[in-house]
Amino acid sequence: METAAFDLSPEQADIQTRARAFGEKWAPLATRIDREDAAPIADMVRDTVDMGLAGITIPTEYGGKGLSAIEFALAVEAACRAMGSWIAGDILFATTCTGPSVIMMSDNTAAHAKYLPRIAAGELTASIALTEPAYGSAVTDIETAATVDGDAIVLNGSKRFITGAPDNDLYITFVRLNGTPGMKGIGAVVAEKGTPGFTFADGPEYLGSRGSKHGDLHFTDCRIPPENLLMGEGSFPTLMQAFNMERLYIAALCLGLAEGAFDEAVAYSNNRTQFGRPVNEFQAIYHLVAEMWTQIESVRYLTYKAALTAERGKFPQPLDVSVAKLHAADMGRDVCWKAMQILGGNGLVTGFPPERCFRDVIVSSIAGGTMQVLKNTIAAQILDKKLDQRR
View: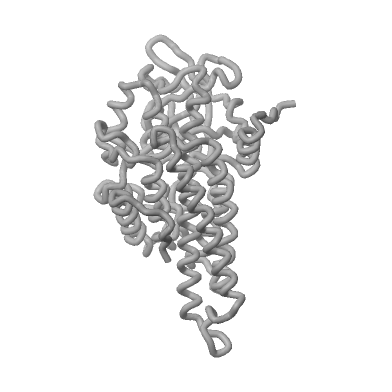
């Protein structure tokens, strides 16, 4: 079932159609990718290039599509819905979302010229590297050090739970510059895979979000050129804008996964017979379908609103996108669980899309800002009063 709530431009409808075709192409492999925790990343990235889905928000002067956050959200939603897996969105993330966004918002024009055309062409993919073994939500406490040493910036430290590691090529790494404490010392650099002193370790196996690794990064006297500095000391508030794009991505991903689970549940209810009649003739199923679709529609409005109100078309407003992500993760879990109930015993069987979508959505409740952190973010903006977590 499609919604008629929003009138899409021909260009928006086209990118939605192409993203749906991308998801449909890879849907037959979704169960295998999930079971083996391995996706053909390079082949999938190549398909996004061929289908015009790489570098959606990268400016046209760098070979990108020059589109905005709403087109990116539509693509993520449609691809995840059609494939019934988060991996369809993750492939789009690697050439459009947080990593490329940090490069784009940087004043480093040399980095723009060096990286953006190759990202838009699918030759390079990018991860964001923020979380550390000792610091997750306490972003301003990170310890990975970046120290200027002659003609190089020297990196030392570790990152954890980095999606796309070691498959991706670029790691937009949040660092503490020159030992400056607190928020003022946070900046970002580009660390390229293969640089001496930059190594990877296998990360944990996730409950959901399978197919792309979530590895660890280790920097030991890793020397990178000074032109790889994207943002220096004092840029933390600006850097956080990139995470508004990630939160939009997660909201759109949850929306697409919930729709995918919904589609499977409706199709199942149309064909499953119990007590001599189709199960979709029972009022209990009627009510579940009505609840699911109402929940999906509410998140659609919030997600599209967050995308449409993005600054310069590319950086969603923090309040709007935090609300969308918070509600999307809640909605996704509930809708996928209801879809599993409609499938009965089959809803608990691995390989059926609602069960896979349910596990992918659970991971989205933590990634990109936990539910509790999001609530703090929302309340702080409503009350115009930031909650001090330190004691």
